[in-house]
Image (tube, helix red, strand yellow):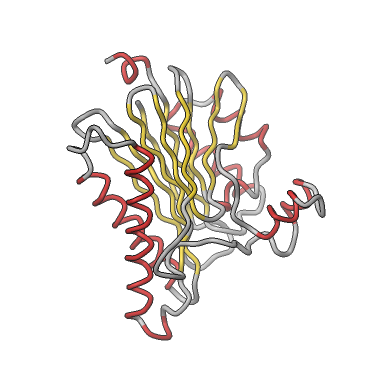
Length: 248
């Protein structure tokens, strides 16, 4: 597999509170994650870095547990990352009160992709020029869309579009959504913060993921989001599934 990622502060924000991590273990398992922090001052950045660091450590340490389901590994890692952020928030007093972060994470093992998420950072699958969103946003506007109150297009500009209903760190426990999907050579996974997904159309995402060289995709996506205004931090991580990964 090929993994490439990039994060950018955007055009408006004073600090980048997004974090991404990725790696490939000795057993051939690959993983990637995106966190989008929230909180006053620098607390959002602290939250996203804390969650990402916790996840990274756990995913490396999970390597020997070959028999365990990848979804279970991810869910446990996210739960532990949640506790790490929560404890850090409690220790920081008023400066870290209420801080939290989204997370979107994937684990690629052989022909299967396991994924987990909390919040409105997204995971997409692009296959044969068709883009599918694997995750469901935990947000106020998503609830309104599902209730038929607003359309998906209206959700992109709704004043409550940044209000999420679930995040890491706001409590000692968190509900984690997990799933899995079989993959094939040529598939591309995209993990991104809402600074990207709110600014680009699915057609734009599909175009870049289908027609741009893998290592250049994150930078190209970020450039388009900045050209569209870049009102938020922007992070994009792509995981390209190769023939070698599935058969080697």
